[in-house]
Image (cartoon, rainbow, N blue to C red; front, side, top):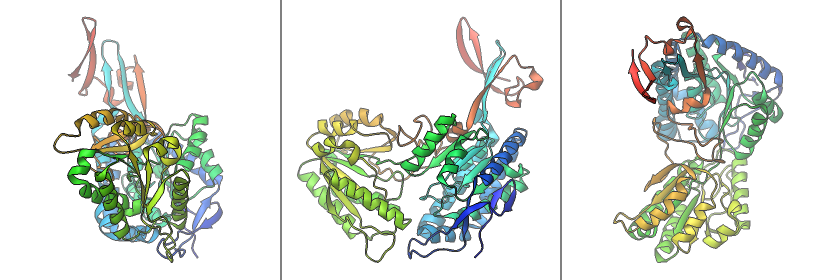
Length: 525
């Protein structure tokens, strides 16, 4: 059986491999052809050398050329969309339609085109010119970036096609993509199109490189290498924190997107007004994609009472009636089962589900768990651990004050949501809950489940640790996401002809002037 080649320094070549692996069908458990290599360090070394050279060459490449690559790549993905989506479906069991063909693939190409527009405009570099002091600053590319892709979005967050990739390239950096081993064929197809688009746009040969798999030790060694400037990782908390420890030891900036339970507080008035409706929304959000979203609502807060009891009945009925989906792998099913066992051990009660699906290698029953507020506050760390999949925990509190205590015990999350009454009866409760929730989440929602993440310049797909490594950055939303892969460069008394084009006086830019002892910002030509 053929072993696929890695992409290093502009060439598809046989890997220096320690072993090979195959993706597996989540539906049948059968191995999928072909085989893929686990690269030894020599492949990493060659990729790093090539990336270092590519970055030097990219410094003289125009933003328009980079934008042309991103747009050409998006066009190529669309022309090959049927094959790419078919591969992603085979490797992940995600539905061809609407999830892949009508949802994730258009989002992927849309991100690439937004990144192209950001690169071409140059506004992301945020130039500042102090003409009086002749000091100028702007953001510019940081250097070679390693992107580690996740299992749950093979296209829109993929290592060679997703938001991290697009942002890094748009900022002028070459990317070493490390594929996720659950969907290597999908990643290979995308890398083929990226490579061709880069060649057509005249970018350096090593602008885009691809390795499929590494031993853990080599992954940690990669993020510590001085030739690498930054790292983006989306995936498990365990894997991400191991890379973070290695990167931190070397001083390499690393941007992580890890687990999140995305708390949803349903206030008493909302339960009274439309509890059944909210239960249906919650079930739909929790079970979408078999719950394998980083924004999946895994913790729900309600105050005890008859309305809460009715809500719980509606929620468990909706979970029980829905078909059990397919997780990405049997290891994912085992991880979900282990997480639910841990929640039980910490005091949560299973209301529906709670077991593997017989005869299905990667399926688990839709599961709702319950814990009261006192139990949660007795074991907050254990009861807010993420159960990645089609499961959620409902925490039933005695009062708004106890709900606030629960929120204060939460770690950082990507999102937090509050459902409140339309008649204004929940305003006092909202005023109590919002301040502590606001500080624990990157994105705050009202009366809407958090599962969707719009690709908008205003989006923040980030949050306080441990949801991400840095609360000041987003993984979605251009041009903001490009800031992760940029450095602030200052030019002090540098001769005009030596300045980057965007910092020269003849170009329209914002400048700072000191007038009567105060700094003001104004446009100049």
